[in-house]
Image (cartoon, rainbow, N blue to C red):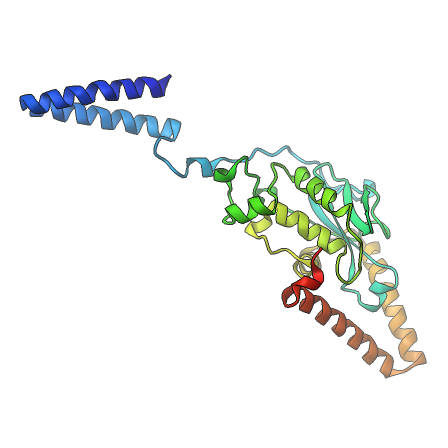
Length: 275
């Protein structure tokens, strides 16, 4: 209604302006020009006329999430981690990870064609980090992207909500074969974060997901710390006492080789880790 009135008025004033030009009525021409400019500037902030960035300033309204509740295994919008049996004893930086929905339920990829819902594999959560939904991109259309990867994000699979992104990744990974060294739980979480374009990035992978939890994650409680590191210390003590220092050297070499494998596959031979 307002736009129709504006264009009708513009059409009328244009004809009047032309008439005044032919009649050489400078004062009336000046008045009409000033009036149209003021009317246009008044409509611009209200309706976004002529503002190309108006579509980009759409803010997403988030439903409030509940508090983190470790007793009930509820970690809204978090990444969670727990040690893996045997593997984490040899390389404590390796563990099992999952991502949580807005209601706090945990989703994790733990086997071929197997995604657990609210049943975290390999034990209770030991470490977690809550992510900020404000750092995600939830575009209703291509013009409303808040990230810098507008076309790439759409092609990858942008979504409207946090839970929609997780569900899209679930549909993709429920047909995947699990492999600890190439396609694992970290791959699933990285896929979710890329769909969210979290922290304005489409480059989430096994390495930076693990690093995020390792350096910024919080321990659930003291028992979680003991549960994660006691087997490592016990194995170190037994190995050194029985085999001697070569055991420690072999353990360190094993950890270094694992790290080299994941770094090489993630950043240099990406075809190995296509998941």
